[in-house]
Length: 95
Image: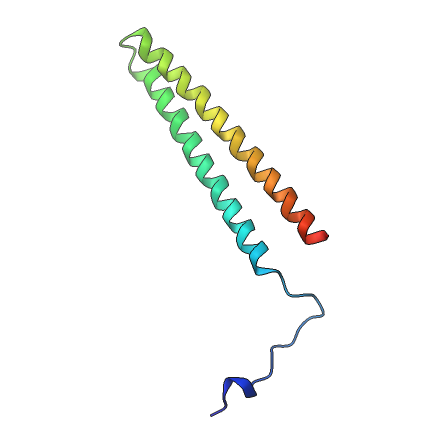
């Protein structure tokens, strides 16, 4: 049996090893974008349900359109934050 210290490191292909902290941050950024998308979709779907299926009063219709607008805003904010962090991560990788 050989100990771990006697094993040779895996061969490299001449490329530098990736910075694992940047990789983890990039993956977390993608998960966050998906969470924003889920939240935006939920708000829009709830708003559409209120507008289409509960025409009980004007306040429900108004609340439904407000939720649709809020969903769109959440989606735009999520895409902006994703793109902003992606640009910063790429700048760190290059520089």
